[in-house]
Image (cartoon, rainbow, N blue to C red; front, side, top):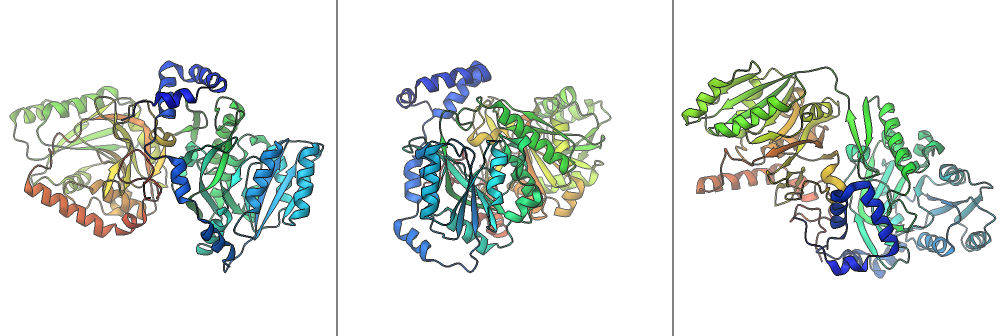
Length: 606
C-alpha cells in the first residue's frame, strides 16, 4: 500500500515553481488524479537513493584500473551534442564529464547552433585546444535539434555514436561499460543504460530509472530507452539519422528506427547517465511541451506503419506515455476455459459478467467440472441456457495443468483464454483488447490487470524471482496509481503473467507443450510463460483489460501437510528447470531492484 506522506519533506519541496507546476497538474489530471500524482511523487522511499548511488559508484581504485585496462576491441565512440545557448556552467560540466572518462577512445562532436554566443564560443575554443578529441562544427542558423545533431553526426568518425544532451552528464565509467559490453557482444548494434536525474545545482540525485532488457511493448508505450543511448554509426545512418519533423521526440524516433533494424540490442543495468532537471525540462514539467509528446505519438505511428502493423496510438493522462490499440483481424473463435468445483454463486457471477459486458461476440465457454459435491452446482449447470456454454467433466484429482490441457483438447477456438471461476469482468472491451494483442505474430501470451474487490491491484504482471520463484507486482496498489515509472498502467512485455486470466494462441500452446502436469497447483502458468518466451514469443501485460479477481476461492489454502509437501516439490521443480533465469535474473526486471517486495523498490545490498 502507498505509505503516508512525509509532510515535512513535502513542505520543503514547495516553491513558487512547484506551486505553478501543481496548478498545471491539477488542471490536467483533475482533483483525484492530482492527489494521486502528489502522493506518488512525494512518498518517502525506504532506501535513500543518493546513499545507494554513492555505495554503488566505482571507487577511485576501480576507476584507475579501468583507465589502465586495454580491451581486445577498442571501438571509437563519438558523442554527439547539439549546443544552443547552453548556460556556460552546464556546458563546462558536460564537457568535463566526457573528458574524465576511463575509456579513452572517444571523441566529442559538438554542433554549436549559436556561434555568436561569445561565452559558449570561448569555452569551445579553449577545450578544443586542450583536447584534440573534441571537435566543434558551427551551425550558422539554429534550424532545430535534429538538424543540429545531424551536423554533429557529419563530423563523427567513430564506429559508434552516443547521444548526450548539452546540459547532462555521463558518469566517469560510462564509456568503459559500453566498451566492455561491446567486447562481450561485438554483434550488438544498440546499447542503452540506466539513468537518474540530478538537480540544476547537482546537489540532489533522484528518480533513478532502472530498466528492463529490450522490451518492444514498453518502447511503444514510452521512450524508456532514452539515456544513455549508443548505436553503431552505420546503423544510425542507414536508419536515416535525425528527422526534423520529429523535433521534440527526435531521439525516440531514431531509437524506434534503429531497433527495427538492429541485430542485437544490449542493456547495461547501471546508472551511467545523469539527466539534469530544470524549469524548462519536459522531464520535470510534462505539460510544458505538448508538441514533444505529439511528436512522440507520431514517431510510434510511423514505427507501426513501417512494421506493417494496423493500430491507433493514443495519448494517456500521463503525457509522454502512450496506448497502442491494435486492430482486430476478423472474428476468430475464442475458447474460454473455466475449471470449476462447486462455488455455484461465484461461477454464476463470473458467467453473468461475461454475458452482460463482453463486447467481442465470437466466443465459447467451456466449464471443466472437477468433482463438485453440491447439488446446487449441478442445478446451476443445467440452468445455463446459452449455446455458447458447454460443461465437460474431469474426474481425476485437482490438477490445474491437467484440467486445462484436457479443456484445450475439447476447445474449438483458435485462441484459448484460461479464466478462473472467481473472475468478474469490469469493462466490455476486455476480450477484444486481449485478442488484438494475441493476434500479433510475435506475441504468444497476453495477461490482464486484475483487482481485488476493494479496488487494489491483485495482478500487474509477474516477475521471476520475487518471493523465491515468482510473484505478482504492484499487489495492493490502489487502482488509480500507476506505480514505478507507470508500469502498472502501461502495455509492456514480461516474463510471465497469471493464468487467472491469460490468453494464448492454440498453436503457441501446442508448440510449448501445454501446461506441465507435474505442476498441479503452483507455478504452472509461470512455467508455461517461460516455455513460450524460450520459443521466442512475447508475453504481453495489458492493463487495459481489467477484471476483478476474488482469489482462488475454489482451490483453498495450503493448509495441510500434503499440500505443503506438494508446494515444496513444485518449488524444487521450478528451481531445477529454470535455474538460469532464477540465477541471472528476470530480463524483464532489473538486477538493482529488490526481489523481496512487489513495488520495484531498490535492492538493499550494502
